[in-house]
Image 1: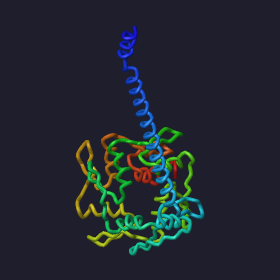
Image 2: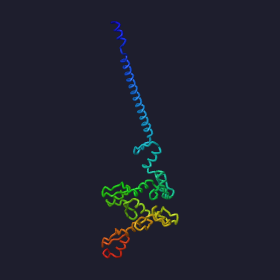
Image 3: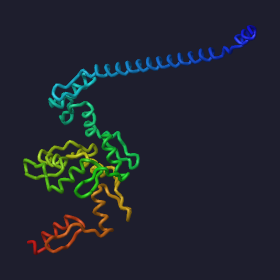
Image 4: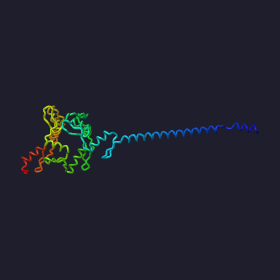
Length: 284
């Protein structure tokens, strides 16, 4: 009986203890992995906090007038010119001043004629990249700015803003010399030049001077012979778009100018003026 008992004891399975040992090792591994994850998260958090502190530390240059912060001293100095009105960059050709050097660089192109931004579809060039972007909408048909009163759409916010004056019947820009008023700021500025006889834009071929760059460009086509505006009905070409529009009325029969006295219509405004002066007895 004792022999059988010993044999039974010797045959006892050691496996349970081995399994228990393996379970313990697996639990230790899981604990180690959790500790590693926790340590990694701590490192990442410390790194994030360090970056945040470093970014905040960089933004030490704060505007005393509006509270806006800048990472560099130069950024703050340029910003302060908005409040002080300082314009240290002056054009040597016309005396106009600017707050930023980049604005002066763009302005000088008006005098030099440089237009580095060119439309890939029609070849028209612009002094500023933003103007090219607006121009491209002519080709794409995109008109993202919509009038909430009549639904009419425009390619630029400035065109929409000027259009709104039509509904308000406002002409906020008034000439102090002759009293003429304008809906568009650009039109007002160009008008003022007629009083001051300011002609900044000179033709290098004949020496003739103009108040606007557009007038100079139109004039230069006399020398180059360029006629970029072509009629789709008869292939006749014109130097300016306005002349093309007038010409197209021959084909369409459109007569947008009419006499309020007798109702007669005309294709061009000066024909209406001549009619009122000479032929419409009712209006005399």
